[in-house]
Image (cartoon, rainbow, N blue to C red):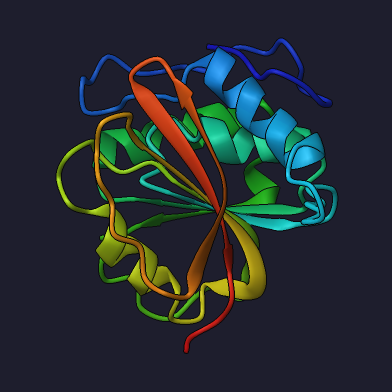
Length: 189
């Protein structure tokens, strides 16, 4: 697994040996960031200078890709200790520890956001078919996301996810067994 673009382009990331970590494939990650940069029509996404949130972060590939492309800070949420250490190792290998906040916590009970937030861009990559996407999105809506934030959800291609009303779908695309849905967050109703 490699960083696709930006200042760390081509640099390797460790994916870990744990089967619980399922990193977004390079091809899907490249397609996702291309959609963010060029394919959302009237909805502009500025990765440069953004604070990003990577929930169910696994290896940290999405947040680290955003840092490589100019995000100013990445907040990683992961509750598996081995994955937290993997994120830390990957951030260290890119010399990006100073621009990261790595939190070992349950994505369904986030608590108050760190000082670096709220996030302008958020990535959610929950374990497939476990029913975690909707409650995690609802938890992040409690102060972790800026109004107008772009929210990316990766789930199984055949998975049905009911998202909270404050998330409006902008675009959706399938990559093999995965589906990537992009929403705009419009604050709590």
